[in-house]
Image 1 (cartoon, helix red, strand yellow):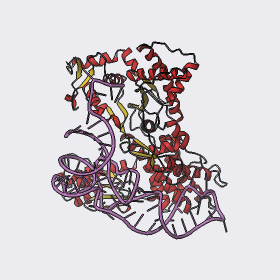
Image 2 (spheres, helix red, strand yellow):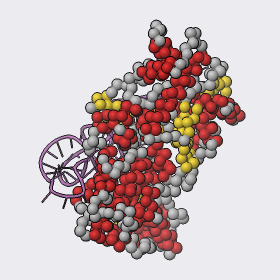
Image 3 (tube, helix red, strand yellow):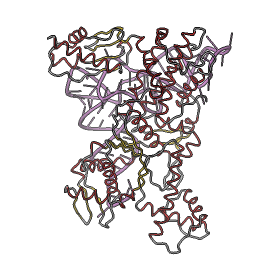
Image 4 (cartoon, protein in one colour):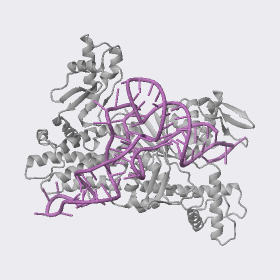
Length: 554
RNA sequence: GCGCCCAUAGCUCAGCUGGACAGAGCAACGGACUACGAAUCCGUGUGUCGGAGGUUCGAAUCCUUCUGGGCGCGCCA
């Protein structure tokens, strides 16, 4: 059992016992905290139970704390000390030897240490990237990809049944524009003097596609109509999407489903969604268009769902898409969107509420990435075609560095991504710091004197030899790991894990430098290698969740 | 004009969903390789948590307001 949970139960039991003895009066036990204090002098765990009990029990918090302490019945070997402090906090000091039990657990669970059943098998879908197939992925998409993938990993590790999905916007004028762009580039290639449309996609990738199209024997109608544009757009879209899939795969991201917007229409989901809303009286006509009463669900205003031209809006597709997702019976839908879509959140949440699943939709906004080189902004214009692609970033700085940096900030904080810093192998670049800790330990286990000890079960009798402050702190850090994973998962915040790993690596490096693991003392060697093996296991697990490799050497 | 996000050390950022005197990395300066990998370690300083009110036993964290940045506000996608 987790220590925090154990402490919590000991406190509850103490409170109940005190009440049974008539020493404390309360109706129901109020919610209380058991937390790890920032300051070592406050113990390993601290609880505010006496403080939150004060009003009901009509006594001073410190008095209540004293009573609770009298009724506390901890296991013999658990506590070194417990005391009342400050306004009435109860501070618990765990016996040093107790912490090393975590090593036995890590050995028993191996690469599964850090996993939990927090999610209890709940079905969660994470939809991310979902870039329009009109051009290659850029660095901003990379952040979304790293974040979504790490989130999905975290949710899977905490006992959720996770599916990754990519939504393809393959309907609408953009595909038409793409087809048009391809057509004119192909014409140019054939030496014809044509004027490239002003709203066309100007990136070089369109020229490449045009070249490929012609090489494959593609034809160009002399007087193209809309259906010709569409066909060319479909061709280009498929090629681009295949490229996106390759980029993502090389970035370490794969999807369970690639969901096509077109299929929503083909399978009647848009009509179904509109009918549902219609039945509930949430649609109305005005000026020839069909409106959804989004303002009844917290949005600023009502939103058009079908234009007077008869064409449905993007919003209609999205409602239908989310309805379709919910009918696949997910307990939770997580959408990752670029922050430039944030104005769109209220209307989709409104639609989700209207359809009865508002509480099961979480939308995470991923803030923009500013690309820098030597601290200077790199110009990126979308239409002009001079943007830095995810592929280029991967080629230049590597997958691991890129992913780690993307995951080193909260999603809602803007991120400066400096290409020069990212590819430097110095302390300013924490990827290598963490990876180096892992590689260093791998190297230790290759040393003479460590043969066979990496996989050996730790001998609990030897834990008494581990008494250095660095050793106790490392054991505590390892014991905290499962909660870090759970916290990162349930709050949908992978960056917590990134920070934890950096801290763990730091403790390891410091320990490594001060003390030799392998020595003439065979017992001490075994004890220390057991500890360090635990660190290695956790580093590998954590890096795995982030999608970063844990190298045996570097 | 309205709405959303952000504001913490010189710089880049954490702060566990209100807790006890605010943390880390970088940068600066000074040290450490005849011992398991120096992509490492050790030491030294830094704060009106943007300002002002409020809620609370207790606020960087919640509410109001102001200031300063970013983004969004189409019968576009």
